[in-house]
Image (cartoon, rainbow, N blue to C red; front, side, top):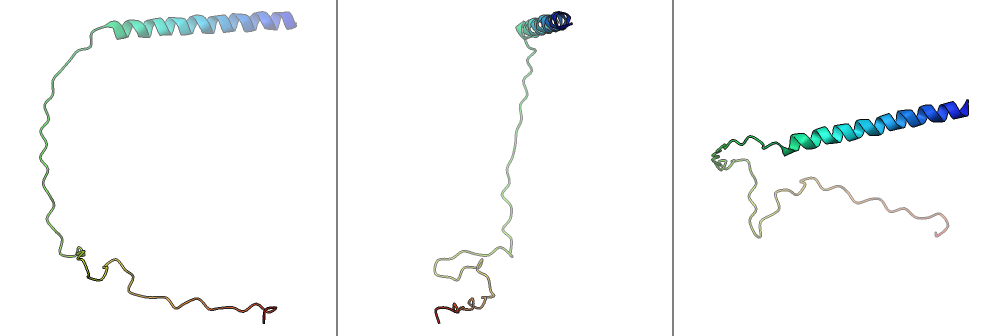
Length: 84
């Protein structure tokens, strides 16, 4: 029984190798053909967006507009019961 399984496995493996070689050869033949070439010209125009009135201005010496307006209270200090 074991010898029969080896023969089937060898046959299936051989068939897979033959199939891979055939696919590789067929793909290589397609690459040898000269590709059809077309020329496409694309023109792009870039327009700068208009400035927004809501955009914050960054000026030297001025306060940072990205800073939070609410400042949290400092964390409470805890004392260790043994250091006491």
